[in-house]
Length: 379
Ligand code: CAA
Ligand code: FAD
Image 1 (tube, rainbow, N blue to C red):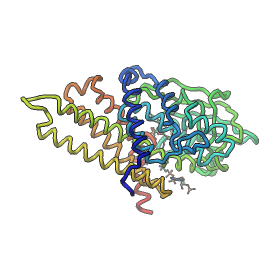
Image 2 (image 1 turned 90 degrees about the horizontal axis):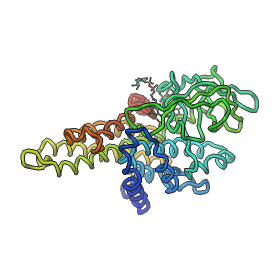
Image 3 (image 1 turned 120 degrees about the vertical axis):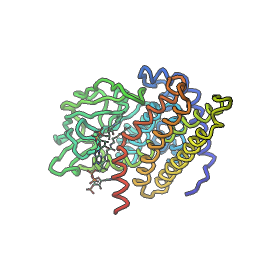
């Protein structure tokens, strides 16, 4: 791996940092408290090209590499993980999946609008009884000739009420197991498609997470992605890259909390000196800084593997497993370094601690990442 970031990488990183500080930081506490979706901010992210960063410019994207995406995700997640999960889902689950596996017609119809942020997308795999065990899809897509009849419920869908384009995974041939599953493009507003209430969450409270209900929704055949029965592989292949995005989100949450703790430790005095002069605090900072650096290297390694067309399922899973633990550990210590001030909202670290937890759960729990990693190691 080449460790030298290019001029372009540094420019993307600086632009994302500037956007996060000027557009996301003001109001982030209120959005979290009131569970307010960052609608205006997401619109601006689209205008700045953060929602289709890796998409080919001929479809309205930025044509950037995955390393640029990791750098931007880190900066945006330092400040607002509710905004960065919108970015992650749109870039690496929805746009990537459509660009890689969609037909030219699907790309023209959906990808161009998604890549520019004119509309946003959602990725719908999880169900009430199929989370980690994703092959146990209960949602059905019955083949009716020129359309699929979609029935079932999807759970926990990010961008659930704000998306316009939904990639929905459903079972068509139960007798074939996961090889009978399809991935369908469902549009908001299709008859029989209903959206449940917003979930009231521990963290990423600004992000809109909803259940989706499908009752006899007619989805045209041309909205199927890939061959009949390709849906599960579509989901797995797409998630392999998505995990690099969530790893970078975790990295950003950790480094955001670390920067705040570092600054605070040089300002707050106890026993006549700045708390940074106490070795117990210094050692916490040393551990936090070391872990974050290791997490960053794993994220960049996975991005590099993807950009250089190597297998990245394992490196992406390693990055997510490690960075999400670092996010959890670092944010807990950042609250500790802030003492009582860390426990109240104005100092940001309590929100970062709550936001960190989801990175160990979505896009495959930490236990699932260990399954992916160990299977690769034992191949
Ligand atoms: N690329 C392509 N195909 C893949 C693949 C990959 N990276 N990984 C697995 N597959 C294929 C396998 O080859 C296999 O197909 P064949 O039998 O035809 O060869 C098929 O997928 C099934 O694989 P497994 O036998 O390994 O399936 P399994 O039942 O043992 O499950 C699992 C594997 C890794 C546990 C998988 O179910 C999984 O990833 N679960 C977690 C689900 C998840 O991550 N959900 C996230 C939802 S999206 C989200 O969360 C978004 C958000 O929050 C923002
Ligand atoms: P379960 O699968 O029931 O797992 C429960 C526990 O058992 C976990 O600790 C798990 O690791 C463990 N476990 C399960 N199986 C094994 C095993 N074989 N070995 C060891 N341990 C195991 N999904 C989408 O499709 N799209 C989205 O946009 C989306 N966004 C989300 C946003 C939020 C805020 C949340 C909370 C979830 C979101 N999800 C989304 C769903 C998420 O991907 C699932 O919650 C996750 O995959 C875990 O599934 P589950 O909740 O059913 O837990």
